[in-house]
Length: 97
Image (cartoon, rainbow, N blue to C red; front, side, top):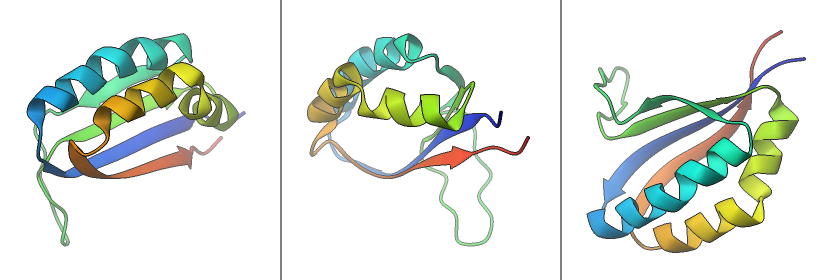
């Protein structure tokens, strides 16, 4: 079974305090959903029109698990806290077997 990944690239962070509130809620929600944070705001080298803002990469045992974690009630509560605090490109990606 292929793993699933959350890939999130933050284009703009307009409210760091609200982002911190999101992080406090999202961390436990991701863990409860079986996710493992592989990268969270570390150094980035951007190429080909990329940006160097915060990039978060989270791994799940399956694509289905990644989707279910996003749709969970606890993660949806975290998204409410994030609302208006940042602009990001968020994707759920299926890995290769």
